[in-house]
Image: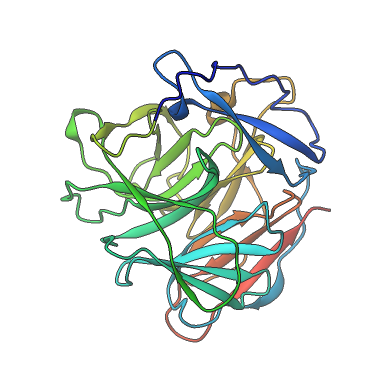
Length: 320
């Protein structure tokens, strides 16, 4: 879209302060503008207080309920504290769920007409309508897919029951038409940059970003940003990621370990975070654990397993 009467503006705020305070934030959304820039969209900032220096041990926050039988992606709503969005791994229909911080199901959202080939992770971030949920149809275990895509849905107002939501689909490919498996996406809370982290079986993971503006009418070519130092040779593959609501830390989940990348306090270039040394943080011993998400205020994070036998617990790790 383009609004010729709206003058592109620069984001005039400190994006990387050591603490965030409640405010009506202004976010630059490039896809709303023409080739010369974007426009400002107002979004409610829930007042995160991140970052955290030391995390506590896991506490059982509740049990993940049916129909989340194989939870793969998890992300916290910032406008509705205590609400998380989640989805199942491949094999489910095109739908996602709102759950509470205790794992209980609150509402189901269906993307009628959409395809769920291998949904693996979910993200939240700015979009033309304010805040959107981004669903990653990004899995490719056999490296044979030619139809990778991101689905976008305006963040719903959570109620109960089942609701159909309007969606957009953004197809993409890797540079040189390479094929990669991925189970991790996250979106920077201020810039709207969507990042994808590959899942490598015997090598370290790579980070790619989605070009802006999003355009459903063409296949986007991802831009390689960095090669990580994880997984190490003693780790299992990387299965999930999330960025804190201040944009100053990223959690990277592997089956056997959880690490956090932290942006130096004086650094304003977010992508320098991928050069940071991974810090091992507490995790729970979960069978085939994939999901990880910061809370709305950034002062805790949650993990869950996609284990098919018995309802898996939802674990919370609080800042000390």
